[in-house]
Image (cartoon, rainbow, N blue to C red; front, side, top):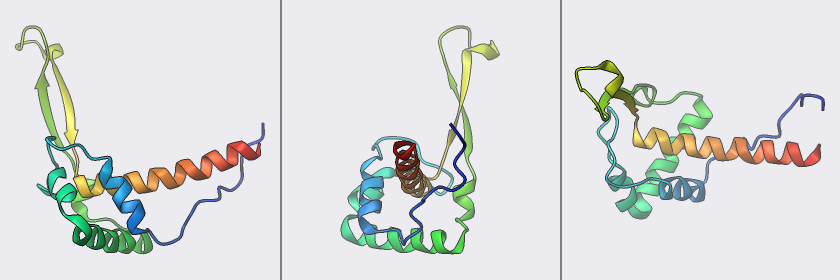
Length: 122
């Protein structure tokens, strides 16, 4: 199998439907990132939230830049079983921006669709 030279990626404008689907992936009750925007806010925001997020995502998509908070994470250490004085008894997680995650979901779906098409053609 030869490597693909080009990927037919959807570079069209981000749609409200894509934003809705990305928001549906969010789970309530989870920690949020540095911007302190919880998933509950996006889930409860209705059509106004979808409209505003879609506008923001379009600006990011067309401009090639995302807000700084989306590029930062908060590292948190969580205890696991065992002696908490032992470093091996802890694991780290990174808390990321919820709106940034939904934007990434949209990008991931577009990439996945393009890759699926490429693989079917081969």
